[in-house]
Amino acid sequence: MFHSLGRYILLIRLSFKRPEKFKVYWAEVMREMVSIGVGSLGIISIISVFIGAATTIQVAFQLSSPLVPRSIAGSIARDSTILEFSPTISALVLAGRVGSSIASQIGTMRVTEQIDALEIMGVNAPGFLIAPKILASICMFPILVIFSIALGIGGGYIACIASGDVSPADYLSGVHDGFNPLTIQVALVKATVFGFIISSICAYQGFYTEGGALEVGQSATRGVVYSCVMVLFADLMITRIML
Image (cartoon, rainbow, N blue to C red; front, top):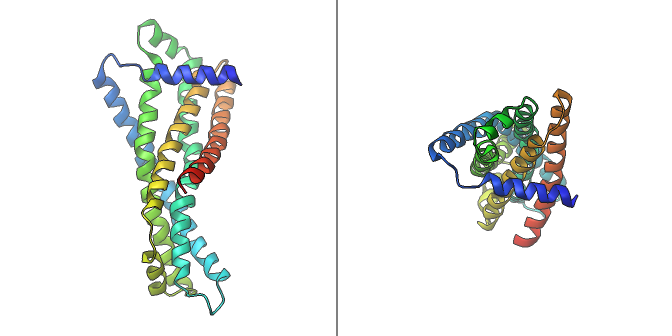
């Protein structure tokens, strides 16, 4: 475990070594941002709308007492979406989509000796392959989470219109009442940390792949599993520290 941890830290340190040609690295960062951000909008949109709708319906079902105002459903759905559902579930989904892609791409380059060719040419392979992916993830994950929060709350509003369990006016009243900006800060911090965790762990697994095509798939699987576990651990720690 300590051997893997030390090798992971050294790889991250080498990845952020000063680049030889900044323009080349900048182009890679932009390409990765498009791949991670635009490529993930579809799955994030679908998940966010349905989770927001399901959360609102379940909260309305549990708050069936006439003594509880119906607007509380909007408040609970809002805080749950901002603090937990959007950042954490989005990160778990992105670990499967983005993380596996990063691990398989770098792993394939390793087993086909493309990384060895870069190193022979004097190129800092970790900096050229890993740093752009980490930077793009750190930049795009918070944007995707903000997008997910908006769609999640919108999904709850659609559920109110479709089901009638809570009136849209009561739902919007609950969404506006008692809003604490700290919840947005917590969500953005989580998204940034999750982006670093997923991209760096999956890149590490791919970079040290040995063997052939079978090992590439195993590295991608390990990257997704380890990053998901670390995302949940980081979620607990950030929640405990900031809240």
